[in-house]
Image (cartoon, rainbow, N blue to C red; front, side, top):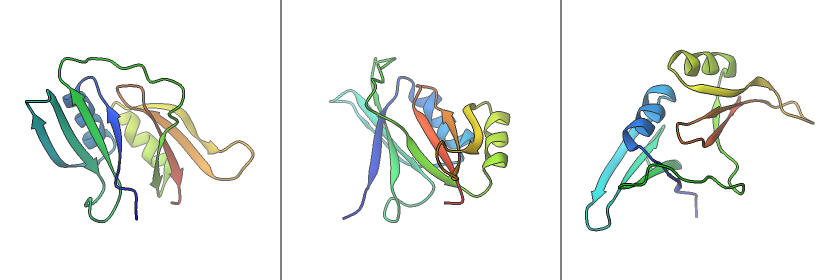
Amino acid sequence: MRILHTMLRVGDLERSLKFYTEVLSMKLLRRQDYPDGKFTLAFVGYGAESEQAVIELTYNWGVEKYELGNAFGHVAIGVADIHQTCNTIKQRGGKVTREPGPMKHGNTVIAFVEDPDGYKLELIEGR
């Protein structure tokens, strides 16, 4: 068994695809419209779905916003150089909500960014 993907509902698929592909440098792996169900699925990631977990962006036609609730935490992304990654994200118009630094009660260097729908993505250096 392995984790295949994490699904996030998005209010504007094109805006979200731009963030994940242009700001976070993921690749659009596949995209499919489902007219009978009135939704579109787009899968993004850093490699092939057959080899690693990816993110499924689900756009339900006509739904522009979701309440995120308080149960979901974040998606974690490993990076080699967290300071450079955060600078690049900011230069590309992304929002860094926690600058790089050690996590509370630990030594792991982390940062947080936020996607256009408000989902948190944790960057972890050296993973």
